[in-house]
Each structure stands twice: as structure tokens, then as C-alpha cells.
Image (tube, rainbow, N blue to C red; front, side):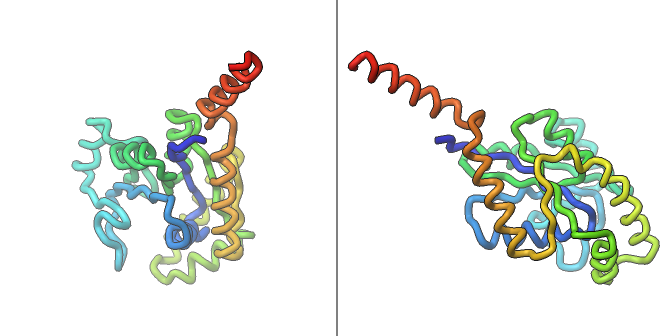
Length: 210
């Protein structure tokens, strides 16, 4: 069967819990690699360079764009975010399923470049839960929260471009659901062309008595 990893894009509203979901998925299973994004935004308290993000100046980031070192990039709330190419390609070839946690703009760019990409969209069960989670962070001003809710309304228009919708109401149930989706995706026929050709050849040989 297919041994190459699958490229997976996970998007969701700010406050949907996708970051926490990715953490519990990584802690529970060892076949996933979470791609580390590059960004020009200021680090939040506790964030570590190279683990949570590669923090870049605008000049550094634009140099990466010019040298085509990014699979995709987008601008979100006045900051750049992008996915470094080399790490992703290396992990896929080693058989790891690589997860990109990126915004809708970037997700659709990745799908265009790599049509076999699996797109997952994470959402809370309702808008009130989303707002409550944003307020509960205690890290952003009321104005920023309002801008994120406005952004969520815009992003909701792009949900139908995704392959699967994941409602994050219980983190462990959600983790298991995402894992099952990805494992099932490995069995898709278009991902197993080589295996199917092998079986066809063996069956033809059997008919000929070889």
C-alpha cells in the first residue's frame, strides 16, 4: 500500500480550538508532523522560535517569497504567514502525514498546487461558543475580538471548499474523528495506484498460469 505521507491542511476560525486539537493529535499518534509556519507577527507569551513559529521580519519574509522557499503564504490581520517548503517535502517522503495549520487563503493555494491535499475545517458548534472562547483567552482587546468575529463571518463563506467539516465540541472525540478521516484517506484508490497495478498484474499472470 501507499507509504508516502499525505499533505493535510487544517483551517478554522480563530478561537475554534484548532491549535489545541493539533496538540492532542500529535501527543496521541506518532505518524503526524506538524509543519511550523513562518510569520511576521510578534511572539505571544510562551511561544518558542522553531517550535510554534519561525518569527521573521517583513524583510526576511519577503526574501523567502522571492526565493520561492514557501509552499504558500498569506496576509492576515496585517501580518504575513507562510509554509516553508523544504521541511514539508522531506517529511512526506519519509512517510509522515504532514499537517499545515493555515488560513483559508493559504489552504486554497496549497490545494491548487497540490490537488491531492486533504482539507479539514475546524469549527465550534455555534457562534456564541466562538466568541466565548476568544474572550476566555484573555490575551486580546475587545476591538481585536470584534475583528476576529468579523473575519470569521468572512471565512465561513469558504467552508464549502473543504473536504471535511470537523465540529470541535469535545476535544478527544474531535481528535479521534480527525485521525479516522486521515487514516481512511490513505485507502483512497487514487493514492494507491502502484498497489492496484501490482494486483492487476498478478491476477493477469495467474490467469495465464504463470
